[in-house]
Image 1 (cartoon, rainbow, N blue to C red):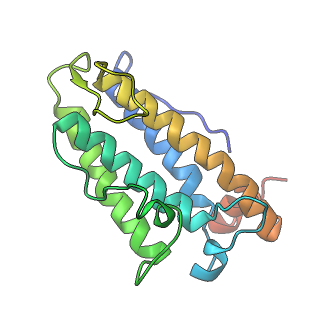
Image 2: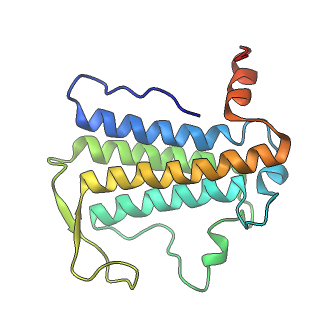
Length: 182
């Protein structure tokens, strides 16, 4: 669902970046409105993606990038042994618990981006086979990457949600607000 995103103040780059990140998060959060954990975990297409799994994945990715930028370890380390858990709820995980975790991550992201002395500050990418060797990225790059990552998965979520019950983001917002878009 396309929405207008404003900077907090004219020329406020940090506020604009954070507002675009939050707008992207909203697209994904709206996709689970009114669904049970079972519905949100279902995979109605040929893909292995579910709405619950997308929320879990995006929260982990966001936390991981902010941890990299801070020089801290990721809370959840994924490798070949547990990659299959990245896009699915396991154990006692629920959509509600993943949304709460993502809210915590979002608060940490906002605090970090707002308090960083300079968005041009860089950090080295980890020595992993999927990253270029000896490359550094800026905090600005991280914010832009999060916008791209979350929006890409919000698009997946739109398709999955419509496959589940035919409802678009516009329908879900209208139901929640009691308004009609038609």
